[in-house]
Length: 203
Image (cartoon, rainbow, N blue to C red; front, side, top):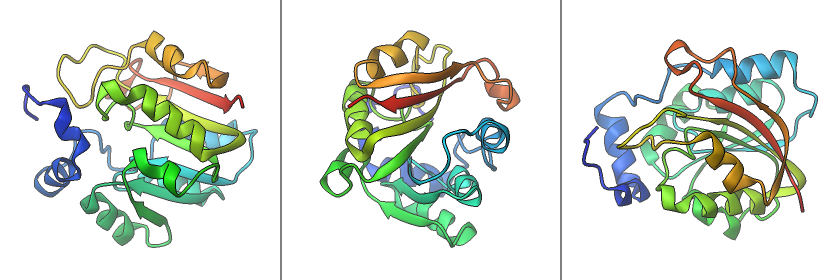
């Protein structure tokens, strides 16, 4: 990916479609995220419900949560990854939409939101806007399940650097932290570069 990428291009679905059509995206590990798989299998005390998977890509994590009983809506504004998702996981509900417009149609619609490699892919100046969208589409008392990456410095993006303290700064006013850890089940290249959190909507 270009070292001189202008962040504005990440706001255009054509930018992402081009990547999916011409190369294997670096963020797509080819299977469900082990951190989520471990949590769902052994530590989930929140139950199941409706969940929005934001920036779902080709849908490996959406399928994982569906297999564990969640009512999944997989959201992406690029067409190409959703086509792959529908081919590989035909039972998953998909929605091609800009996540920043979800409030128009999905106000307080979900019990859960799943975050992984979406927060780091959006234009960094829109991160507070992202938090507001998550807050708006969650039902009262709803949960954000998030794996934030990359914690190391990335001068160019996407993915754009997610500093450890930045997560708190953006989310603390609207969410209460229930879990916060550096996971032990990350894929090798991302080990100690990810932060696993569960936040509950405050009000």
